[in-house]
Structures are given as C-alpha cells and as structure tokens.
Image (cartoon, rainbow, N blue to C red; front, side, top):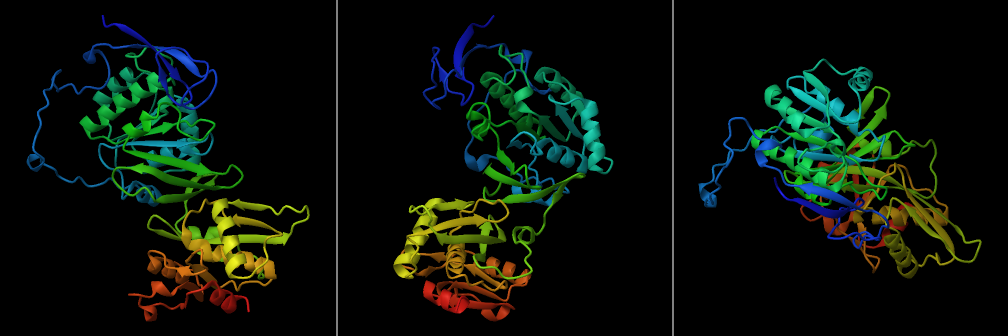
Length: 458
C-alpha cells in the first residue's frame, strides 16, 4: 500500500503548507488552513483509462516536423454567442470551465446548450440537483427534443464506468466542486479533490477527444473556488457575469487556448431560458423621447465586436467643500485624468464640482476609445447643453488635449451607421487609408478637444 501523506491546504486560495497556520500567507485569510490526507493509489485502480489502452505507455520525444497534425472541425452549436466566445465553436477534446455567482444561470446555460445539440449524444452529470429538478428546468426551457441523457452521480470512478459504455459526444459536469475521487481521502470540494477530479476529466477529454464542460463555484471575492492550478489545467475559462437586478448576462473569456480572450457573449434571462442578444448596442443605449444634457454615445470594442454604449455624466457644485469623483463601470483614475485635461487644456473650472459618471447597461469599460464620449458628456452636463442623439464619438484623449487615433475604426463607424447615427467624431489621424465615401454617415475628423465642443455644444 502506498504511503499516506498529510498536507495542509488553504480552502480559500489553495495554498499548500507543511504545517498548520492560523493565517494563510498567500491570501491573508484567517482559519482557512485545513489538513487533508492525500493517498497515492495504483493508477489502474481509478481514474480514466480507455479499456483498449495498455497500462504503461512509454513516451518518446519526437522532432516537431515529424508530428502529424490534422485540424479537426469545430462543433457548432445553436448558440451563436457561445460559438463566438469559444473562438468559432467547440473544439473536440477541449476542457472548458464556466464560473459564476450562485443563481446567475450557469446550469441553465449548459442545460440549454445540451438540449440544443440535437444531433449529438450528450451526457449531463449533476452532483447538485436531482433528475426531477433538471427535468423541470428542461420543460421550462421549451427546447427541442434531443439525445441528452441525465445522470446524478458524484463519484468519478462510477462516472467513468458509465462513460466507457455510453460513449457520449459531449460531457457536462455540474459541478467540479461536488465531484469526488476515491484516489484522494478528502471531502468533496476540498483543494485536493478539485485538483484530482479536474485532472481525471482532463485526461479523459484528451485521450477520448470528447469535449468536457465543467461548472465551477466562485468564492466571495469573485475568483474560482479551489486551487489556482485548476485554471491552468483547463483549456478555456469562461465567466458568467450579471446583476441580479437586471435580466442581462455577460459571458466573458479569461483564458482560451483555441481563440481570443477578448470576446464576450450577451444573453437576456427570461422565463423560458436565456435569449441570445445579437445586437447588444440597442439594449445599451436607452430610449429617450427628448434630449438630455450629460449624455453621450461612445464606441467600444469587445474582441471583434463593436458596441455603442451610453455614457451618462452629472456635474454639480460641491456642497460640502470636497468635490466627489465617482464612476460606475469606468476607471476612476482615468476619470481623474480626463477631468484634469478638461480643466488645464479646455478651461473648464471643474475643481469645485461634483462629477458622477455612469456606463449604462452595467458594463465595465476599459477601451480608451470612449475618452471623447466621457469628456463630451461631462462638458455637456457642466454647460447644461444637450448633445444631439444622432452623434457618436470614437477617439482617445491625450494629456495635451489632443485627439488620438484608435484601432479598428472601420468597425466602429460601420456599427454607428447601422444604428442610424448621422455623425461620428474621430481622430483625424484615423483617416489614413479610410474610404470616407463608402459610408453613409458624416465622419467628423478632429485633432483637439476644442473642435469637438465647438461642433457639438455651440
């Protein structure tokens, strides 16, 4: 029998220590170090191993030019948003981890995907819900009849015995924190169990070529529960975000070995399931019957997708002497920088003004191309002059008040034209190689912030 090894792990971040500590040296949390017994068993007694494979395989190094590689076609789903986030579809043999807050819709999303794969044999393994609960959700989703099979099990050894005979084409695990392997003498959800179970599913995915989707819990800080190595092991890490008070959900990519990490998908949570939002710019721009001051429309990019978002600003005299600077969905330090540029280069006295900034729709924006829209919204509220609703902005602002060029200006202009905008302000340095005559929108090139304010607010 193999020697039993005892180690101490932090249940918050996964830090390993040879002895018990009151405070984790990695994350700083108190009373999170617990003792776990890790036992190394014989490899043939558990875990995934194809029935026709030998027990021992001798690996030999090969020159890179001698390795045979055939690109396998991706598996397209009926969910265009998921296909975009994954980089063009599901890659055979990939291991995808989806994390998110409780109740955000992770299980609903994967069950909806499983039911939409009507031409594939899908095995949905649940360690949290009963078969009756999953059946109730499936009836509410009103999905087409598919070859989706449900199994409630938490033991990985039992799961792989069923998988070997069932031979699914897609495997879904809900969730990895509820799985338990007999190779590790620790409770389900512990650092050792999460690491071992994820390693077994990864081995199965790579050797069988079956894509595996795993749902992961998150901690109160918003990071994925379990060891950090869990995110390194998987091929793709998706984060399902959203506000409980709104119906919109955002699927982001934080890691993708087969595509871009800058893509995102937008859904709307309805009673019948998650609805794909094919044109998110329409929901990010509020419908107004009359023009209001302090509102500007900016163009941003998330991956290859252009979005027109609404920037709202409110500027008022500071009542308590110390002006407030508050922003929602926008970097507060960058807001401070733009306010300094407006005061130094534009001559606007904002030192004794409270400034509140909000990005409508609950998005978190990091694209510098919305700098001009932020400045226009602030000055519009300060002067109490409304910006026309058919005007958009797409440019970065420098410390000297200059309007800087941004990347992929063609996509931004085309999106503004598609949504019916009549004018868009861009940097004059973006005009190189741009065919203005091919657009049905008035493109206004500018070099300084003063030119923007003269054209919009005067």
